[in-house]
Length: 357
Image (cartoon, rainbow, N blue to C red; front, side, top):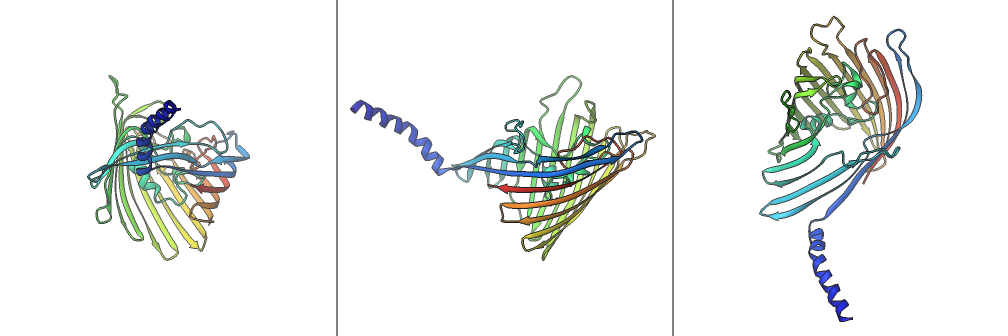
């Protein structure tokens, strides 16, 4: 009996420090579940192009599960970590830990992390979109480098970079800075791929303003082709007065061998108690291959939404989105695209529920 008591005491002594550390520096479990029922289709396009027949679907809208925590190291210094994974409430085919994950240090000077994280360009531009970068009418329908070739190239500047070093400043009289470097781990004798991103923002009560810049070298564009250089610049802001919030975003993109692409977005949110009425417009134009005889691409995206906020954690969103592409444009939904070709015009209705915990 005494031997058993001694063994239990030793085991307790070994476990106690870890348990105490968790109590003093708790680890937090958090998440978001967001799913939508949608009716989608795409019509038009070149003669003989098969249309995307109207269909119903249930779509995930960036649901996630994460764990994060901090440890007080003394002297105003803390260690922090985060591991975040996507999951689809409608399917079971999600890769593990594909979202923002990293480890870092933070103090009065700001925060520094290593890992995988959204770029500063993506973070500040996403602040302007009341729909986020997902849902049918989210900003990546026509913004973030979208437009010329649609989903086949993706939204080049709506990125969560791998192998990244990031710095986040504290707020200095409303100003904040973020900087990101994705290292050239894939360097070869002929290519030196790397990515830089940065933003400066200003927040003062109802006003938010920001600029952002992003640069990629030797990164793919239009399939497997590598471009020597791609850059994106953005200017944005939103302002709230009474129940009305207005936002605007302007972007331009330059790519080696292509013309300059321009995009802009404007929106208004009218809050009436628990109800929010939302309208958002996006446009992308130009950016064709240099020397091409083809027309410059141009697309327009109109989205209407009604959001009912049950609480701070739960809302219902109804949305209608209509996209018009000219013969060279391939803009599509903000997420969960259907397979369209250049010149087709997608439209869709979405009804969804989001809950955070």
